[in-house]
Length: 238
Image (cartoon, rainbow, N blue to C red; front, side):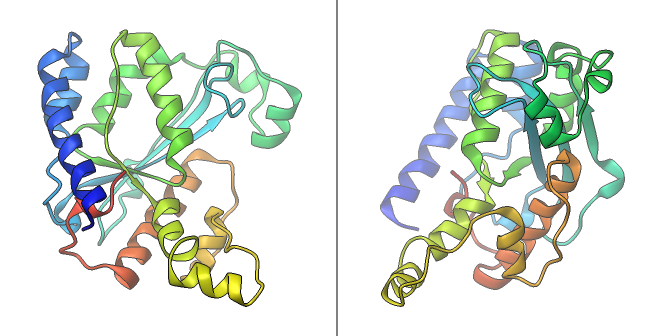
């Protein structure tokens, strides 16, 4: 692990411990208390949960979460029967562009729950599991804003980003320099393009549970090919 990674891992461990003590909401305190924040823990020993969000846009200050997909898994198994999926009623409404993109319509959302109504179930489903996403700036920022609006307290946590793991190999270092030298464009980091590099099938996109499944399978392949079961999770998370 490089110096930067060691510092980040240490920062997360100390931050999570302090956040648990300071949490005023019992649900948030429980989330922090049970979070697997030991950076030295082997990744194979950790219960994981793939998360995918579908949103009405890309700016959490102006847009909202439209659906959430959760899928518990480990490096050896995926618990499809325990998947969770919520379509939410966004406070900002739906645009025609959003409907075309996600195929979630006004009739789907008009009777759907709000974030406040699913918050307890969401935190319960996440409890004790390390989140895994593909492109953490979107998932992290939208979850942070949505839950901070409800709880009036900061929500921060480490996670594994499968896009970041691909970027380490294909956008930085030797492989990236080789592509540049050969005059080739940077390797795509889109979810299905990343999966293709490991021989994984292409799935339809923009359904939260299906994208969560695609992310879980991708991490399993990445660890198998480039790491091993004993890799400390602090080397992987961001």
